[in-house]
Length: 146
Image (tube, rainbow, N blue to C red):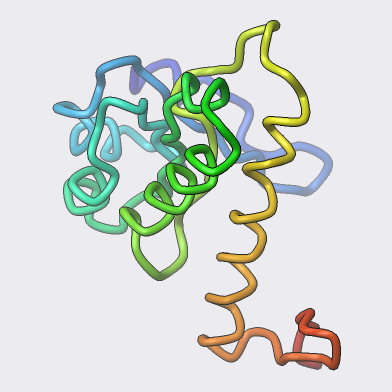
């Protein structure tokens, strides 16, 4: 895998091109995968995100890991599972929320919309607590001026 990562384009048009390595069931090797030069490791839904975070020790970002089957659950269960995944990573940078292994064509697009709101709300809440944004009237956040 390291040879593949080394062969990837890392810069294009003056911008850095990040890469993510995903291997189904690859959690036991996530420490080694994090050391091959990738920017992020994709984590499938069978892996405890907190354990994966500990294994990579901040060397790379993590992407994942909602069970795609959750998209067939009720909206309440889908929201709860989405929040469980977010909480399992914990606070701090380096998590790209995503499904833990793709989406099937028979998923109702409205189900995807159901999971977007808790992800955005969670992210805004973290940003408010960290001071990256400040609350505006009406409950939305705005970035601090830099």
